Amino acid sequence: MKKINTELYRVENPITLASMSTYEDFSKTAKQLKNKMKQISEKLADFQDILYANNQYSVLVCIQGMDTSGKDSLIRDVFKGFNSQGIEVHSFKTPTKTELQHDFLWRHYVALPKRGKFGIFNRTHYENVIVTRVHPEYILNENIPKINDIKDITKDFWEERFEQIRNFEKHLVQNGTILFKFFLHLSKEEQKRRLLQRLNTPSKNWKFSPDDLQERKLWDSYQVCYEEAINKTSSKLAPWHIIPADNKPAARLLVAKILWQTLKQYTNITYPNLNEKDRTLLEEYKKQLQNEC
Image 1: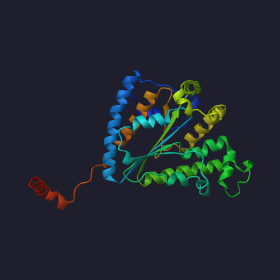
Image 2: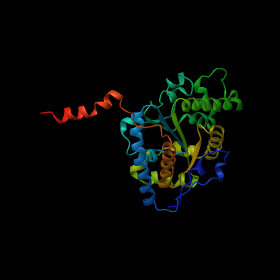
Image 3: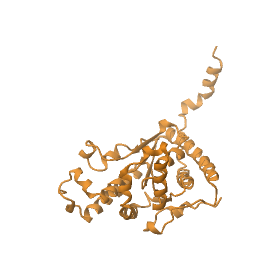
Image 4: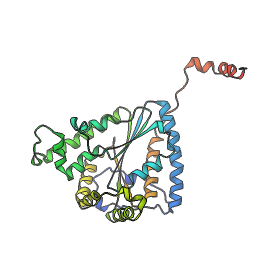
């Protein structure tokens, strides 16, 4: 297998999405890619157990991408071996009435993983600078002071929102959240193929919505908004990774590898030691059990 250099996919300087590949196979078959991903996934599941016992850090995995980019299936496969008690998945759709009574980050903040747990945001707080930029009329539902019309939503408004997101993520990292941000970079041609597959496969018809076609017409606008959001918010503390998403097995392997390469560096995340009293009495406890009638 071609060696995977995960650094190539981390955003450290301004990027242009149109110039970045949406396909990778690492010179291996789908079966080989799946087998390798499974091996890494098992290591991640073991780490989850240690993370839970350590109870100092949490892990937040943020996944963004266009419709059909493979977010759901990636989550299902990469985290398949996890203990369900140690992981929570949240999918953020149109804000509810209750959520709209708070600032735009509130619903994301209350969904953050507790110490010792993994959290996955399937669509994330970035919906608030992507979908709402493509559809600025949605901002009016937030009832923000001095925003009474679309014309009130200026460039400064978006710059402030980017800053608020950067501050939000900085706060999380400084308080023990290990943060990952993945953009599943899909080509327009591959999205067309996957949408047609949904239409042509009866068991997948339920996944299709006419809205998918309306949003597809706005493809270029979405790409511009994603590109700017990534460039404005990728930092050393909270970097973005651009994942070529046209080949699902390769995308899943790459995400798993980035997760594992980062998490294994946290050598201070270990099983807790017994207190001195219990440690000295271990042999006595063993004898008690062995001598039971």
